[in-house]
Amino acid sequence: MSYKDKKVITIGIVSELTGLSERKIRYYEERKLIYPDRTKGGTRKYSFIDVERLIDIANKMEDGMQTFEIRRQEQKMMKKKEVRDKMLRGQLNAAFNIRK
Amino acid sequence: MSYKDKKVITIGIVSELTGLSERKIRYYEERKLIYPDRTKGGTRKYSFIDVERLIDIANKMEDGMQTFEIRRQEQKMMKKKEVRDKMLRGQLNAAFNIRK
DNA sequence: CGTGTAAGGAATTCTGACACG
DNA sequence: CGTGTAAGGAATTCTGACACG
Image (cartoon, rainbow over all chains, first blue to last red; front, side):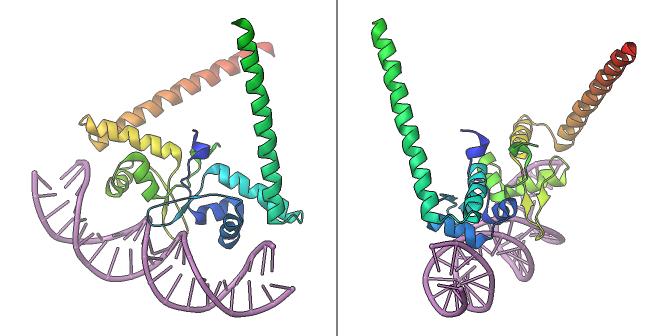
């Protein structure tokens, strides 16, 4: 796992990096669009990938998309990816079995 | 500038990442071994490179090296790098002048 | 639905100092 | 010299709620 995925940034910095208010950032979490980690004390911690994702979310919100639509769109992408990966694995297995 | 160089991590997280006490981390700054940024409020912000550097410092401290030695050693490395870069630039210029 | 804001409290960080060795 | 700690204050973050639309 690279530095991009390490959850180490507090919400104030994320707010500066993205230009989004802390209120918005917390709200997008409430709407299951983002999943920060927490310190023992309860402070949120984000990764650079989260920051990139928030910027992406912000763009879609500007385009008039609603949070549930963004979430659904994301789930579709994940589904597509899963199917693609499953097929790829199937082909790899087939290729190996042929050799046996 | 990559994510590694972005100063976005607060001292508590850096402490967890490096295993060093906050006291030590602040002390190494006082000794000019590390240079965090600050928020408007005065809270320190570190980069992943700073974290790597702190781990390096910790190792040298364990080896019994003193802070001023670590600083001096670092300055020597920088000096070497400067000379190397200067020579490289000189050769590049020479190569271009030949073509003219 | 998405977001601003005031409210009160808790977690985090800051500095300067004293201590020990 | 390097580091722990108690002290007091300031900056940061948290949650739940009310407001508007």
